[in-house]
Image 1 (cartoon, rainbow, N blue to C red):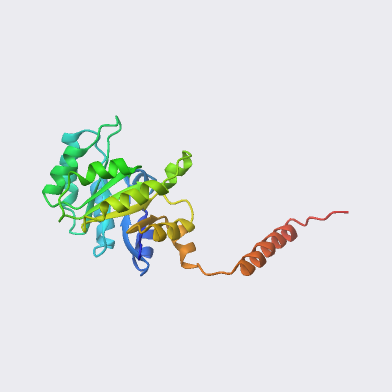
Image 2 (image 1 turned 180 degrees about the vertical axis):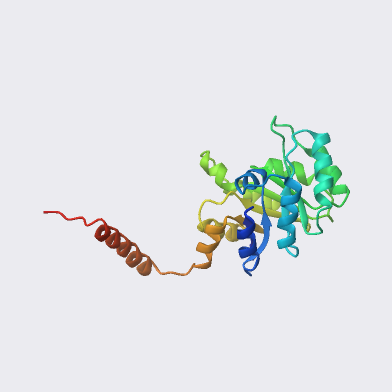
Amino acid sequence: MNTKIFCDIAELDQIRKFNKKKIVKGFTTNPSLMRKAGAKDYKSYSKKILKICNNKPVSLEVFADEYKEMKIQAMNINTWGKNVYVKVPVANSKGKFMGKIIKELNNKNIKLNITAVYNAKQTEKILKLINKKTEVIISIFAGRAGDAGKDPIPEFKKSISLAKKFKNVEILWASVREPYNYLQAKQLGCHIITVPPTIIEKIENFGKSFDQLTKETVKAFLVDSKKSKFSIK
């Protein structure tokens, strides 16, 4: 399985840098990353991202919590570029399933990235509502599930199996915690993994032997002990 790597980022200088990398096939962002990057105006900042990255998929998220406002935002975001995937949550902050908006946007041929998914039951609910033409990404949050003591792997396996009937649906491994997650995603058959820049750089350096890693680790300890001028007498 050739799992595509998307870069999860909002800083414009980092997007410029990573957009040049062949390994990066698209970008995802969210309101938290936008805020961290210093965005003040959501629309103008998003358009700056799209100006840099105009030939790879870019997921831009709605931030409304209720159906009516969410639909207005989604319809608006969709007009910003042909490569835009509108990111909508599978449920709102009150836990209400956003099936109505998912179905309506999908029927309007709007590309969607359905986010904050954690289990295969949610995947199944999504798949019951969508057509088999318009592109849909389902983002399953592996790292956050793991942080809560939950094993995300069975949910990925079930979700990938369910999505096989849909050529227009891709399953995305979200909330990466370490470079090895990329290999896990590949083994499972995930279509996409979205990764922060520091971990993409580590993935690019895959291939070191265990012997190399031992030498590098011991050298690092040695360098630090010398810098600290440690001695035992």
